[in-house]
Length: 128
Image (cartoon, rainbow, N blue to C red; front, side, top):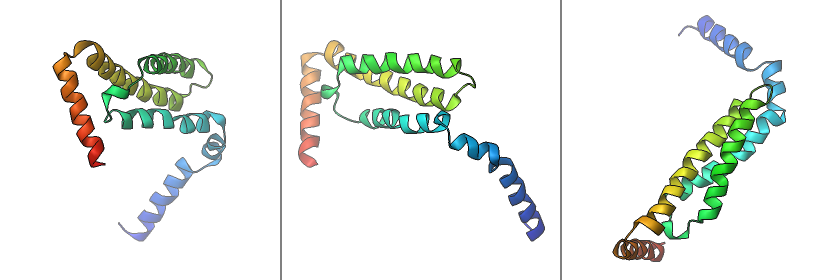
């Protein structure tokens, strides 16, 4: 790419994405609320790889309801907060995955399956 074309592309990018409106948005709770809230779904995604014996059913259920309510809220406010909606959508999916793992382990697994799961995680805990 030639120098003038590269300069024009850079200028176009800056005008489109780094402007007063974008900077104004970055300094609002509409932006920082969801950004700070993303810790919950990140932790939930990380926990999908952990031992299913330690999943709290009531807490998982509460987080499923919490995310469902706030997904609705994110679409109800003006202006619509798609970043908040995305945050809670990711959390909803992760919590539903955790809920499935909880139900599968506690209610759908036989005693032999539970013992093998516990044994597997006991071996993994010793290695760490």
